[in-house]
Structure formats: structure tokens, C-alpha cells
Image 1 (cartoon, rainbow, N blue to C red):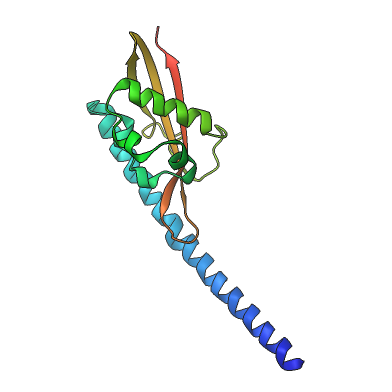
Image 2 (cartoon, rainbow, N blue to C red):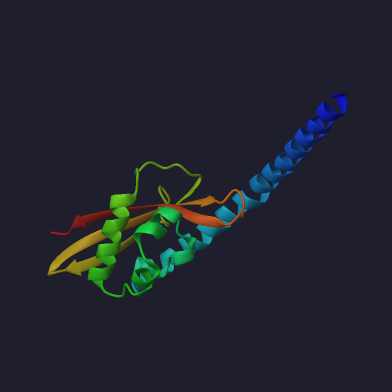
Length: 158
């Protein structure tokens, strides 16, 4: 009986050590990757915002979206969005499925004056101002950064 308890304790201690090491790697390496990702994203969005050469969808790789957004938006629909109407349709899907507008991550474009991206869409002769912000988190197991929340605000321009 003592040998069995001892083996169980050894297994528990080994699992705790492995988890502690994984947590250490996640904090030091994974979160650093999220910071680098958001910094690159902000630099790219500034260039797109200044040049006005494309849609915000051009900035976001489909593979970097969280599972929630991948479920509601098909990859073909995402990559084929090359008109104001198609982008507007995708943006409305994102708005409907974004749970809250509150910030829940350290790595976000919210509050960063250089990170906010604005675009102007014209649908049926009506102009809309679209404001985009994203939050980036790191997957705990793969250590890959992903866009966990995409906050879009659409206002009609008068």
C-alpha cells in the first residue's frame, strides 16, 4: 500500500513540476509573442490607415481569428470580401457575436491612438464610419497568438 501511495505522489509531483515549467514558458515566451504580434499589427494598421489602400480584413489573417469568429465567418467569405457590401456584412456578423466591448487582455489596440483603425464604407449611397479594435491572447498550449476579440463600431456619417 505504501508503494502505491508513493507512486501516486511521485506522479503528482512530476505533473506539478511539468505544469510549473509550462506556466513559466507561457508567461515568459507566449505573452511576449502576443506583445510582438500586437506591435506589428499596430504598425501595419497605421500604414493601411494612412494609405487607405484596402479593407481592415486585409490586415487580419483568417488563421489568427479565434474559434468564435471562424465559426460565424467562412474562410471563403472572409477572403472574398473585396467590396464595401461584403465587408459590411462580415462586420455586422462580428458585432453580433462579440460578447462585450470591455477590455479583457493586456494586448489590445483599445486606448492606443495609433492602433485604432478607421475606414469609410459606402452602402446604397449611405456612408458609414467603421472603427476597429482587436484584443490578442496567447493559446495556452500552442503559445500561438490569436485575435480573441474584435470590437467594431459602425456609425452613419451625416
